[in-house]
Image (cartoon, rainbow, N blue to C red; front, side):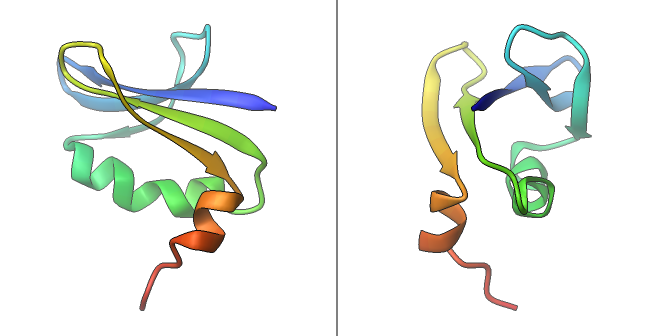
Length: 74
């Protein structure tokens, strides 16, 4: 299973595959990142680790389980 990390950057927030510095998704705010995450993770089986600005693990989400238990209301 692929693991992604969401970390703060000097210009906002970035998501990258664990062990890589190449950003797959970039946003200005953490809220924007979390809002865009469901669409990016749609159809994927993966783990997403979300870190705080001081590099502590804040949350870990397992997809697709997280998406099924937290549906987006439109």
